[in-house]
Image (tube, rainbow, N blue to C red; front, side):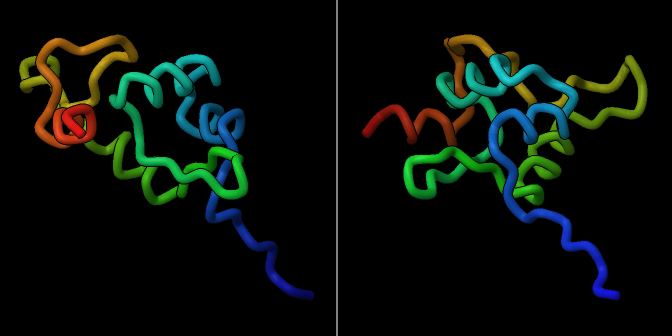
Amino acid sequence: MPLPVSPQYLRTPDAARYLGLSGRTLEKHRTYGTGPSYRKLGGVVVYAVADLDAWAGRGAVTSTSDPRGSVLPAKRQTDLPAVAQSRFSR
């Protein structure tokens, strides 16, 4: 019997569930450029599981005294990271 294949790409509702977020929060992250990388395949937004893991990993801390991780809230940012700034300066 073949092993089940885990999906490499997830649509927004499944990606949000994977991260423990609402679909709307993930959509806001996409709008503001603060979320994980995504792709549009045939007009459908999909997220690579590896990108979701990498984005969530950027927020990892080991104690409350650690500096905050680099995952930004899903809102318009005034001080965008360099990657997001280059995305908006085109």
